[in-house]
Length: 239
Image 1: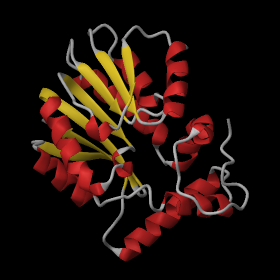
Image 2: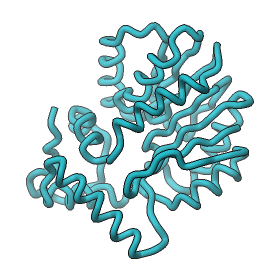
Image 3: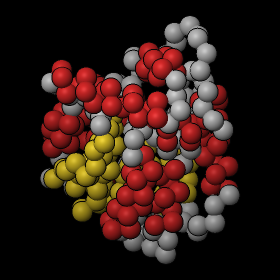
Image 4: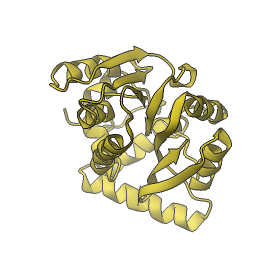
């Protein structure tokens, strides 16, 4: 379904992952995040390279299950199990429907919970695909430490985020390029403006330096940026 949620003037309100957003989320994220389809494809590739036999794979903030489905097909035949966590019942309902239509054999368990409170256990791969940015900043270090503790030796974390920049000019240039991308996907200036206002107090981006330092503090031995397009980036961190 096409995303038209912000196409008419409306009172300012914080963005929420409710039923209306869940209904259009696939279209919304693909038209809002440059490189999103490539990011998903590379999650599958990295899962194929790093998923250890018999281990668990976590999709933290799984939304409609795009990363879960990508991993599910990438690791078939290894005895892995995928756990998808999200705190939106509306998102999980649609995720379950998508999984029911999928023919891959890798088992998937879904749970409605706050990812900041979930224990990670016997994992070889954890994915935070544009979800850490919605967690209060003060809770992010503990979440990453919990993920690190729950990974097997050699396990990896994939982290994709909207990022910000300390340099004001760089921030302005890349923000405008992102807005230009959204307009090129068919969003009007009104839609771009209203969604930006809705997300202002909900999605809190950080610099790449902040992310890399936090990953090191959480215990990860290595962390690298493997993709960036405008003000969106994906990182891989190794235990």
